[in-house]
Amino acid sequence: MNYCVTPGCLHPQNPDNAKFCHSCGAKLLLLDRYRPIQTIGRGGFGRTFLGVDEHIPSKPRCVIKQLYLQTQGSLGLKKATQLFHQEAQRLDELGQHRQIPTLLAHFEQQKQLYLVQ
Image 1 (cartoon, helix red, strand yellow):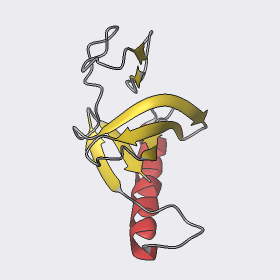
Image 2: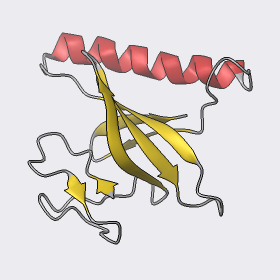
Image 3: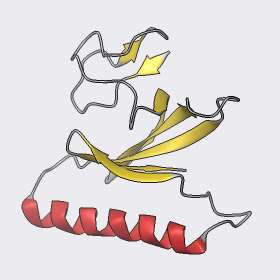
Image 4: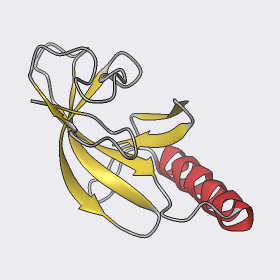
């Protein structure tokens, strides 16, 4: 299954072979690499998805974090964005550690911010 991460998508579940969401038309692969397959969490600042890295032959699983605020106030959004970037920077500085997930990617797509671990 492919899962659409576009905020507000009414029917985010899509068939495995879909490249675009059947409901909203959004591209399903993030960075043409990471395929969200299901939602695993949601909080005040974001959503978390189980994903697959399609560029690695073994198709390893990954966690995709999306900055997603329920309210879009400019001050709150600015602070949340700053904290999201700081998290990516700290994860990158920590590098490999057995108790901390490794940062695989940090990017923006369709005006949404993502971390992949």
